[in-house]
Amino acid sequence: MDSNYRIETKCIQSGWKPKCGEPRVLPIYQSTTFKYDNSDQMGRLFDLEDAGYFYTRLQNPTTDAVAAKITGLEGGAAGMLTSSGQAANYYALFNICEAGDHIVCSNSVYGGTFNLFGTTMKKQGIDCTFVNPDADEEELAKAFRPNTKAVFAETIANPSMVVLDIEKFARLAHAHGVPLIVDNTFATPIHCRPFEWGADIVTHSTTKYMDGHAMAVGGAIVDSGNFDWDAHREKFPGLTEPDVSYHGITYTERFGKGAYITKATAQLMRDLGSIPSPMNAFLLNVGLETLHLRMQRHCENAQKVAEFLESHEKVAWVNYPGLESSRYYALARKYMPEGTCGVLAFGVKGDRETAVRFMDRLKLTAIVTHVADARTCILHPASHTHRQMTEEQLAEAGIASDLMRLSVGIENAADIIADLNQALDTI
Ligand SMILES: *Cc1c(COP(=O)(O)O)cnc(C)c1O
Image (cartoon, rainbow, N blue to C red; front, side, top):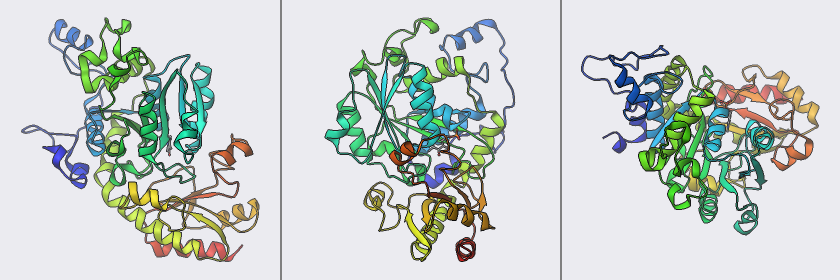
């Protein structure tokens, strides 16, 4: 059985299961639609009576095989792909929230998520309280309201590198009868599987390490199947009461551990349609096959680079959870004993201009709006990804205005360090 395989084996073998005579490699089903012999067969699919394909906005065999692989890597019960990480996080919440509801979210999440929850979902009537993830449980409990429907945080926050105390957040969510949703983009299931620590749902921007080559934007949602929606029926009527837009189906009754993902597919994907293309799902699968090898090298290189930067006289500070000096070192050892990720944050001595000058002198390290792929790259969040945030919001999110986010690639570490060194020499 697949689920007994070790994670490296799952990266290669899970997902696509060719039958006798079928292609060994996952085929790209570049088709919007699927053919049936009679009307009743197709009708049964629309009624969710039979499992099968009829229209790629709902499901596609290429996409499903890749979703199954990611679900296996996370140890979940069901999963789906989306067109982007943003769509994954939006669907993960919108699947269980509606106007009048409320969510609790770590204040150190990715800037795009911060805007989505703090501004766009607010316009839809869903309120979000941002909390300091390092606060104690008593303090955090104050953020909950009777209409709170979920708690959200990132395993390793982008770009503040805050490591989440997953068990603390899971306890807190469950004490309030709601699921914990964790964005596991940076750690990947190679280094952390949040379900093993009590998280209920995991999301990904597969655009990052999973794809690994900066080829395709994508996202994923995986459900552990562990959250008991029926035990909190009144909070989650969308899952526990008949769906009028689907002939009165009650998802928890009909689909058990698959309820949450079936609803997200049959209702949200049907109506909102943020599907990945089969071609992009295929590319993602190629990336997943080497995820375990790449994560190991990303972490080895990042550790060396972090140690180099920490010992350099022109560097003001380095934040990498693999450094003993990091306030998150202990949490990282607990939740990610084999390594965290290849991203680190640091600042050079001087002002904001010094940081910009340093970045402009880099040669191998490219300035790109990306992170977590094979090539070393750098970004200054205050001038780039987090430009929309005020100084106050930046400070709250733990992003210093001199913070540079360095994404250490899988080149030879000595070449990366030499590049950083020559740029530091010029400032
Ligand atoms: C990049 C990122 C996202 C958004 O994903 P896209 O694929 O760019 O839409 C969400 N969460 C985290 C942690 C990210 O790094």
